[in-house]
Length: 174
Image (cartoon, rainbow, N blue to C red):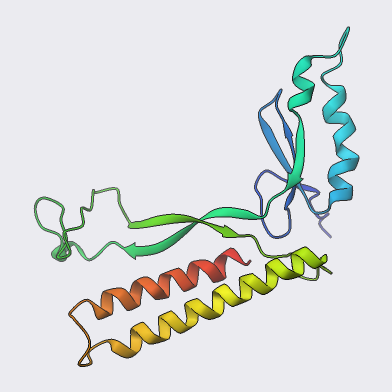
């Protein structure tokens, strides 16, 4: 049976509580504020030699509430849809190394599965669900326009972009 890891180098719904160690330039992420706080003394003590290094005041702890997340991902079109200058039919440039293009937005980090969230976390979770529901509605509306009398020619493209945004919102909740 494998032992469950205690820390992470990256934030997630499971590992959202952090200590930043200025000396090493490291963020370490923990499951709970108690685990983070238990580790804090070791981080602080490394700043003590013959006296205290003033950089000890740059050690910080906190909770991640949002992370930069890919949105509006557009997959690279087939090669026969890219001209000699690397442009697709929408005028988007595709370098040889580009598999997709996207934007990034700061999106809320949901509560970890099974968390009995504090009231403010419960409010965040509720806002997160509302954001997902709104995007589902936008996605469904975009698809309902494709090929219809109100499609201005970019309906399919818009629907795919809305689908990708919904996918990213859902993936961020893992």
